Image (tube, rainbow, N blue to C red; front, side, top):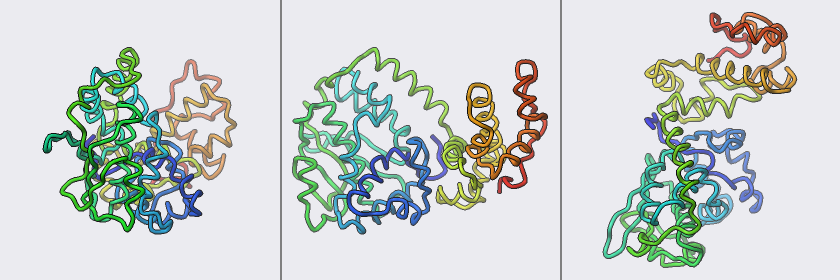
Length: 351
């Protein structure tokens, strides 16, 4: 993906709200404090500004007093949260093949994460770095390595332990939680972030793999890679998450992604898109699908499409399709959607 800023998918924060509740934190307040809308966590594929997620985890760690907040969040992630990638890597012939395959599809899981396998002193280190992460991203790094450790244990068995784990950042006051999580020596202020494996680990066969499911998963993932190209795809996914309830403007999307509105428009224009055309296109796709196959009342359709009222939705629909909703439903078999108008309802004009 040619992204115009480092992003992560909201699945990265899976379990965040529950962890906050467990330790007396207000998850929604913390999200808003760093410029993220709580609704963006509902869809695991929603893109989030990586810098905002880094600040969220650091703020949460300080507020909770938990120096291992990132690892606690990683412990709540299941192997299945990798989606089709989990089926694909389990169906490989060896753990080494599984890891190389995982790295090939990593941008679908976390576009800001850069990982590689590097021989070091008789071991093989799975190194990870976060693009655009500054010195204040220790919790995000620990979350990333924690998730990778969970993945390795799924491939190698629950009793597997790494040779060692390495972090570039300073050690917390107490490292007991870290060593308990990884089950090995954890080194801080090292030259890299990574998990050291034995060469024999890479030759092992992943547990519980199904080659047939792996082939199907690869087809799905290859299609996802082809469709998830460029800034327009990132903005599209974010608009889909923020649209229900109204107020999804270019300014809000830009703020959510950590850029200014001019930058957002510039990158969309480079792909032949504008925020307005992308917004209207999404609304048209959504409304055709639900009016044709769904049973939602029009008032609910209006809300899910981000309109302030049913009348505003009706006005927009007439501008886009050239007739009322009822007439379109009656004649949909012979009358294609009206493509000549692009006006939006006055209360919802993209800004």
